[in-house]
Length: 215
Image (cartoon, rainbow, N blue to C red; front, side, top):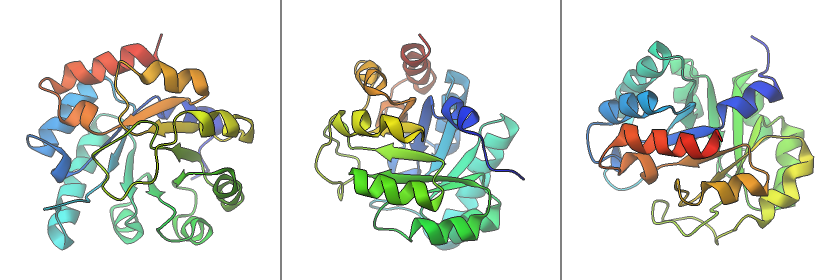
């Protein structure tokens, strides 16, 4: 398996849905299926927060969500849990600055997709050298989803990182209404949690977001 190309990565990041059981108002499997029907392009399994699943339950849900992704041709990314990602043979992993070092993660996962969250140019430089396939930048807007999040970034850092030639996806309270601001700053796509997982109509929410990105 060869490393994903920058062009392929840019296409996958357009509508990046992130979720786990704590984020969903209904069964995560149903939410993911509806989000796929609405047009998401990439999925990240992030099982964190209050009442999150652990151990075998976490792995079992991950396996089911991975199957749904595979059946629909959507790449399946695991947040932070490198061991589970390798056990499931996930398509990639996403790590934050508080997680394992990106260079060590790249050694462990080989050519799988590696996404890294960042909050400054120095972190971006380090992640690029480590072999990151994309940068996750945020929080762009104030968010309640991640309680341990850093200060709101706005779109300034996205604009600073445009010349790194690494695809950038914005995250943090992004909605169909403000997604265009993120794209105009230089991101290739947006990643969302509650904009889809908390929607009354998940499919419609995903489709609306996709419509704003693919203009």
